[in-house]
Image (cartoon, rainbow, N blue to C red):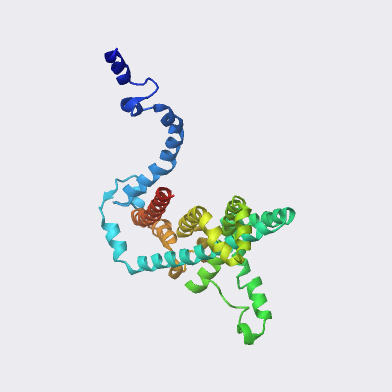
Length: 322
């Protein structure tokens, strides 16, 4: 009887899958995501791989007509890293992204807080009006702001000319906002923030709806004002949302191309960012340098991958400590 009991006690539980069974590969979930992975591979991974290959080759008009490409290795990367103009465009890209992301997050958060305080009808009206900016195509937005800040019939110059000269100075009717990099990026920042802040506002509003109102009521009972409640309740609870929005804004602002191309074009090289620089080298002349443009695009892609990796690392650490 004892041997039987001990044998029964040592018998494995049929409900327990066991280590070997738990490690068994189950292809079902992988088969479900296989179509999505195939689409991503065709539309993203294959073009990125082609750009990487082209960055190592000399591709011009002859190669486009069918001649074999000449392999040059890392020559283009050494050339751009030794070129002061590359570092100038990188500086423009980083500074513009820093300013645009900060303003986008600030304005979008303020609009989201306002929408959360408004009534339903007024909130729907304001949200609908704000989302018009987000739905506007980049080309359309660039044309609108080029006209607003233009020297011929520009609304901004007309309004500034109506203000006292002691306040804003004179000569505004003929002022060219796209003559210098600083003024060009000022207009570009206004345009990009105008388009991007509605997405931040709606995302923040959705996050605020998930915060229990009892927390704010308890904070008011304890004597906390709106500013303190925002930093002690809203920011900690919406931190994952803010992290996602910041990373997405950095990626979007780093690769801004359409608005700057419409506003400034290829003539004003002093206002180039990395995207416009890559396009100019690849397609901006009668003798295209697709290899050089691809090398610049690879550098830009690697920068954005580093930003994404940092974000993923931060989110994983937050998940481990939560």
